Image (cartoon, rainbow, N blue to C red; front, side):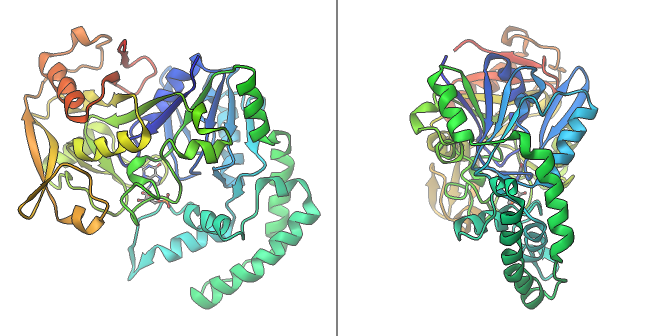
Length: 426
Ligand code: IMP
């Protein structure tokens, strides 16, 4: 069976977690390859809600091996809390979870600096999740980070932490006028995490390559989405990792050819959390209705999500950079009762019509969407389990998206539960 990569095609929160949960029953292994505790993957099983930040969404399938790859930045405090929360909900975690020894650790100073650096005149600059993601990846790239594997040797970890604190405390006090962090309590706290996580820390590059040699099937679970990718997203309004398919090779340690099939996940409309351009944003009652119908509030931060129409221009860009083979269209049920529905098919920029997604945020901020309009539907479609039973207007809308994006739709989400999905033969 070919491996599969599930990636977001918009600005995140497309429902990747639910899809990975549904598909994971067909795979031996699920791997997270980038991002960190900024992700909030919501999965509903038998009416019970699970929110996953670091643990792969395959964890709810007994027997599925879940791997946090080397490209993920791991906050041990978040991870231990998440493991405990899942265990309290009856999920077996430690038996099925492996954490890469090469994954970089998010330390408390990363979170403090993230929040301080993202504030300008009391307002958010990027609107990050405040989970320390950018500062942690910065340390990784500038070779100042501390990796999870270093927890295994407490004396060596202590030395590295002490060195790091000298520099970070200088930044905290001199640059931001913040309080310095004391070594002892931090060291003791992290030694506690070391004891908890030790049985799960492995050379996952070796483990995953061995699994691949044995012919095990692997599902790569992307976090965030293509429009937040550090290279292909709306930079600087992006996250700090390669959220696209390319991130698999560097973030899991398997060669690019191991990716296999790619499913791009897109909501039937668009949402965005944080700052940055969003051409199809609806800042009116319709946007508020989408937010309310769709429950569009951040799973990690609780922030209200900005809502707007489906944007075929940006999704086309995402499908190209991700090499998507098909689209998983999610939350189609939310559009019911919205009246006529719009899809952005191009951007008007001055006298020009742009069909390609511009790389410049300045351009993107000044474009006007060119829309096509479609009939809406009034029916509640959450009980539909086949395309045949969908209202004609919903079928026409799906077809329009396939044509405007240029890819087939392989599944349709009609609700948050595991069973509320229509899978289409390709
Ligand atoms: P960071 O990843 O916390 O640095 O945040 C950078 C940008 O990515 C901000 O606009 C966040 O709102 C956005 N972001 C990060 N993670 C997610 C996610 O899982 N869903 C949606 N937006 C996200």
